[in-house]
Length: 552
Image 1 (tube, rainbow, N blue to C red):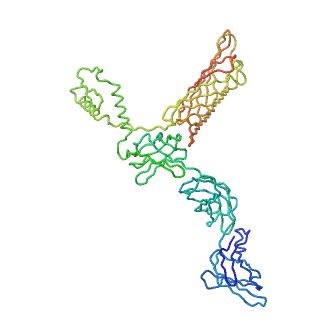
Image 2: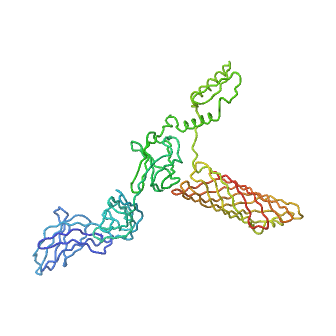
Image 3: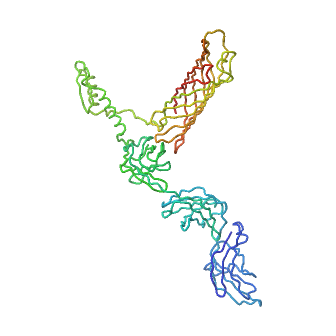
C-alpha cells in the first residue's frame, strides 16, 4: 500500500497529504496513493498537476469534483499544484507548488517474539520478532511507563522477520511493551512481552593450571570464582586480540566451573582468562596464562612435570644407603636421583655407563613417548547391586527343568556406578530395567540329585537414573543395550527347600546418553556383565551383583 506523507499550508488552499485506510500492499500499483486537501468554498471542481521534485515537466494532470484524488504514482518525492474552479468553470484560486512524498507501507500482522537477550544496564540488547509486513522503515521501541528505548531495526528480505538492537544502559529491571509501527499506520503493541533481566558480575579467583601447551586439549580446567552460570562464556585472549572460546562446560556451579579448552595448533604466547556473563559484565584472571609452543619445538611443560614427579617418586622409593652393591660398583648421585654404574674395562660397558651417567646428570631429559590426555568421559568402571524380582515367564525356576522353557527374566533394581578417570561425576545412582529372553531345553528332573543346564539367549538392558556432579548438581543417564547371554543353571534339593544357583555372562553393545547442565553427551560402547544369584521358591526377591566395564 502506498501512502502520501506531508502537510503544508497554502494560501488560499490548505493542503493535507494523507493516506487511505485499509489498503493492502498489493493494491498500491492498482489504486495508487490518495491525495486530500481542505475544501475551498465556492469550488465546483479541482485540477491537480504533479511533477517530480525539482522538475519542470508535468508528469500528471487529473481532475476531481471532490477534495481528494487517487494518484497512480510510484513511491518517491513529488510537487503538486491544485487549481480551484468555480460554478462558472473559471479558475478563481491556484496554490503554489508544494512538495510531498509517497512511501510504501503495510499493515503489521501476526507478530510474535522469536527471541530476546535483554539485560537492564547493558549497552547492547536485542530482540527478534516474526510476522508479516515488516519494512525497512518499520520503527520498534520498548516502553514501560515514561521510559522509552528506540531500537535500531534490521528486517529480513521477505518482511517476515525483524531484529531490533537497543541501548539499555538507562533501563530498569522489569517488563516492557514491544511496540512496532510502519509509516502512516497506527502502532502495534505486544504488551509486557519483553522482560529485562538483572546482570550478574562474574569474578575469577583461580585457574587450576596456568601453564599450557599448544599440542593438546584440556578437558578438566577448573575455574573458581563467583557469578558463574551455564550461559557464562570463558575465553583466552592474547595481547593482539586473538580470542579462543571454551569448547564445552563440563560441570557448572555458581562458584566453580570445569571447562574444556582445545589448544591444539593454537598460537603460543601469553593469554588473559576472561569470563563474560550475559549482559556484558566480565572479569579477567589477574594471573597470566602461558601457552608453550610445543609444536614449534619448545619443551612440553607437562612432560617436564611428569619427569619431575617420576624422579621424585623414584628418589622416595629408593634409598641408596639401604642398597647392597656388588663389587666394582660405585654410586653417582645427581639432581637428587641415585644411579648405580658398574665399572668395566670393555668399551661397550664404558659406553653404557657414560649414557646412564649422562641421563642421571641431565635429570631424565631423555626423549619419552608422547602422551595423550584421555577425555573425562572416556573410561569408567561401575558396580551395580540390586534386589531382583523372582519373576520368570511363564513360571518360576522350578519349571525350567521339566519340558523346557522359552521365556525370560525381568529385572527392576537400583544400581550405583562408581566412576574413575578425570571425569566430573563421582558416581551414578540409577534405576535399572532389564529383560533377558532365553530358551532352555528340557532336562531330567527325576530324583534328588543335582541338575544343571547351560542356555544361550538374548539380553536387553535399559538403565536410567541420576548421578551427582562435583558441584552438587545432578546429571541424567540413559543407557540401552542388546546382546547375548549365557546362563548356567543348577538345582539341588535339600530337606527344607529347593535352592537354585544361576550364573549369567552377558556381552552387550549399546548406547549411553548423559546430560549435564549445559551439554548432552552421546556415547557408544560394549558392556560385559557377570551375574551370580541364588533363588529359592520361598522368596519373591533375590539379590544379585553385576560387575561390568563400559568403554566409550
